[in-house]
Image (cartoon, rainbow, N blue to C red; front, side, top):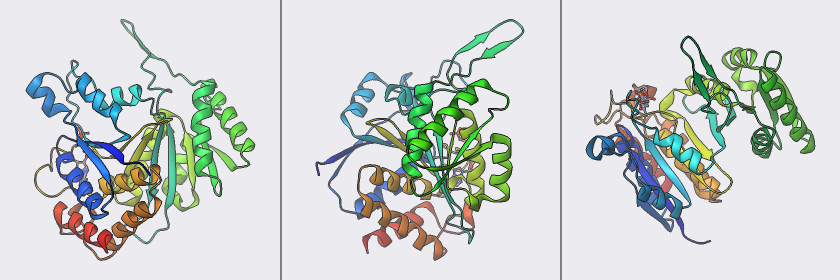
Length: 324
Ligand code: ATP
């Protein structure tokens, strides 16, 4: 296998704590991986007036993927979100969020596959004097590729297609394409209106296996689902394209707790596990997720999930468990 090369973005706030934690775990695996640090984000914007340059993009292009911390997005109209630009540039169309219980005994284990490039976040908006029109774009090709991705995760599972096709014509197309793709791959599927899906996710999350949905619905359902398994500090995510990917904890830069050793590094460490799996390093990925479960079961956790340990203590325990 050729040497993997990853761009590493710590970013702002707790990104500067949780990404070094993930790298400590990566180092414990003693793999031949080149890590290229890239400084982008709000801190850089304040210092230089630019959050990300063309040179930064060139570094990203020279790497296989990005391990990303978090970036503070200030409420300044001049500031353009770097994450949105990266997603666009590399056409990272699939947002994947595994929701797996690690802090309680509930058997919650499902994955939300969210379309990441169109829907309500198409960016097509018309601002009139007394109204604003935001265009919801659903295309056959966009729906097809996200349905394909979801089906690849659901071969032995049940796929739940989440939509609002009783009201929205755009959802009707999404629904139709997802059903076609699922049938073609002989994937067992069901469909659910998004409001019903939200209700059932809260009441009975154990019943779900893989969900596929549009951009805005997926955004909301996945943050809601994070609350089912211990909150933002333990939720990892991947943004996947045809030949590039970015892995990041679901949480943001959390300036309220930054620099105090309170940040839970597990979301970033599980994002690292997703990266290793994506690259075909299944054994190493499993070793990382196993080490996380082991350390959590021994009560070595940060305060957000009931423990008394610091970021570095949790990361150290996970690295040692991986090294065993
Ligand atoms: P941003 O502006 O970057 O989105 P935010 O503070 O608005 O930052 P999040 O970073 O997602 O949003 O966090 C929301 C809250 O959840 C934080 O205030 C913090 O208290 C808590 N939180 C988020 N991530 C973690 C973590 N890894 N460990 C512990 N607590 C966390």
